[in-house]
Length: 286
Image (tube, rainbow, N blue to C red):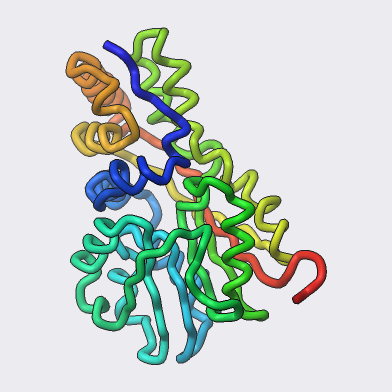
């Protein structure tokens, strides 16, 4: 058996478009674990809306980079004013198709566009807000993409960028490493740090290359998991796991999680996630 944990794939557009995010299946498996076992009394997508969009009033032009399944729109359909002009974009046509199907009643009020975040096909000073949640760690050149976002924002516009921190899902990473043979642990640890390029601990400095004012807001949450299968589904949705880990290792992982739940009542997973809000111009305003 050979391992296929390739950290570089998380910034490889061809892999991301054609494999990991060819559609929303992998993302959906990961979202499901959070939806089932979150300890927060507030849904993440309602919280994000509160901190990103609730104060925009009745008229705003908004660009969402990385559409995902469109959960933020599906879960806040009652809060979208008719005067908003919202464009959901992704570089994966399959992801856009799945977002259209998933969003539900709000879909007719949104526009969909195929966009690469490092070359946004809109003029400068176009948008009141750009949303880039859990995707800036995937782009090949973070500074270039952040500068491109700043370009298409109006003078008083803002970027909202959610991401994770160093402690995020640490117990899950440890549980996977516990069942891997020694020669695979280093590769797994390297792969599981793919978000380090734009994390809660590193994102502010990157954003300040283009924005004058950067604020970080943390979301208080964790997971208390009581069933094994959603954890297994989550892990198998990750890069290289389904091809790198044999059925025997999957079975060992399943037993490991079951034992943790039996011993403690839950398998507790720490979450570290939050939001950056960035405004203004770094350096001289244009």
